[in-house]
Length: 229
Image: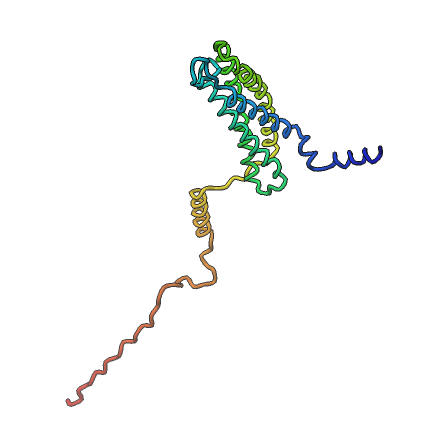
């Protein structure tokens, strides 16, 4: 019995267990499973044909847009969960602050987007299911599953957006960097202020840089005096 308890303690102390019991990871996995189920149910049973025709029709009021909406949003949301689940795995090894900050911003943005899309999807799919006829008996399970899981996806994505926003607020912002124009203005100001603040006398003669040439002496003319008077 003691060996079993010791084994369970060692298993609970493992990093992988701590990773999967995090509420954010549980919500992300649950959102991915719900999205995958909606996508798979509409692909497999969302299109049925009548007994007198071989053409496939969407079971949601014969509206192909409704089935395409659920399939598209489902597969994109599932891929989003896989991508950011990978970011969660490698989060401790990410050392670049700017890259980590960008991931958090994208996580908040896309979580809010998926929340709105699933809420709109639930209303749209439920409305089309109410208006649909009872000819497609085999597709009722897919329609009900997609509608139920769509409404269950909304609180999952709301929680993911809340956690991502909380992590973003706890993360220090990226340091502000001046643009090239601002830098050139700063350099120009610095150079002008430096030139005006330099003293005139730095130990050099004032006429430094002015070329001086020695003056050539003017030769004196000898005047011969006439002495024959």
